[in-house]
Image (cartoon, rainbow, N blue to C red; front, side, top):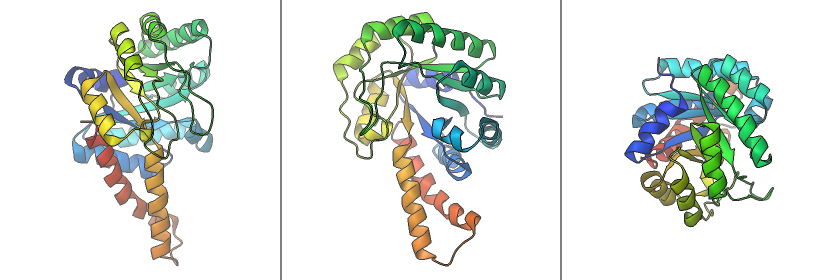
Length: 274
């Protein structure tokens, strides 16, 4: 078995100056491609089931799929609930055997975010599961605006919740299709000065690859969530397959053809964080 918790893969990354890819999964083909990419690179990987994925497919199915892939893998694989918005979601994931949960209380007042996150951390740790929290709000491209993480609040959040990883808002934005994010290095330095908890960047697709590598090596950012650029790869590969084979109609044949280019792109993402 190579199931791993978030703490088990992030602490070595923090110590040795690299980061782990948190790859957003939408189905079997991409999850399998991401594990294949991690094995090819000899690196751990975090398979993430976000709100959209959970709306499409029930959480017990995600758990079974992630664990089947992890148990057959030769590298550490984290099964991670991404952006859990309620204690009920997090508790369900813990009961299903997810090795990591994220409670996203970033839209809550600070006191509520701390209290609710702390309770979920305690439940997760009692079950041998890691917990990620978020302080500051990471916005969306052409959507809700970000609220940058306050370093003093981040220090308090980390100390009072006991989270294993802390997602922060320092210029990163969800769902960016171009690598146009500008990182507030002064804000990042202030956050690092107040805590030694591994930091997480959501919306990692919006950061230039060179910047991701630099931050992985030179900062406490140990996890980059990557979704949009991989979805773009999937979509283009699917279009190319259908254009090249207009008479193909078998779902398995069509989607299987997407895995190779998706694996190649995921390998680039993973390699770029080493």
